[in-house]
Image 1 (spheres, rainbow, N blue to C red):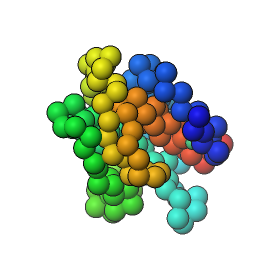
Image 2 (cartoon, rainbow, N blue to C red):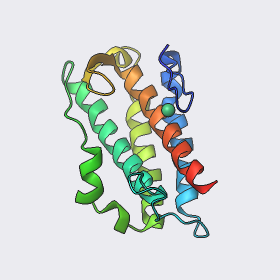
Image 3 (cartoon, rainbow, N blue to C red):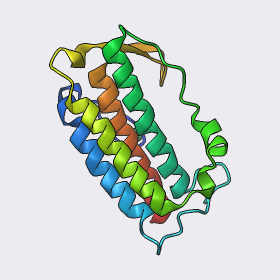
Length: 165
Ligand SMILES: [Zn+2]
């Protein structure tokens, strides 16, 4: 089984049907951090590491992109995806200039929007495939895409909690 060495997340594909719920719960946790105005959310602790606000913007965009990818996989056989441009978006969307309270709301909504699309997958839809380019270029079932997105949420929660600890 795939496992993230950094955060310990394990890719249990049999849990894919619960991914939407996990993503919504993680979105609520992350939004609570972004909504806590006693925290320093905007300072980069290291020059090359995103601030909690920037991580929040990134995760919001991940959820929106993943939603589009799952929808694409329902109407097209084994679509391939360009990278989302994670680093370019920081500047192009001005992550550091956004309001954490608004990002918190957007993140929660993006999680629910993605979960809704996952909730509408039938048994056979979970086996539809995509060509996914990260971390390596491979054909993946939607089960993997869903579980990978849970990992994104959990991993980035760890990223920000480390900074705020
Ligand atoms: Zn991880």
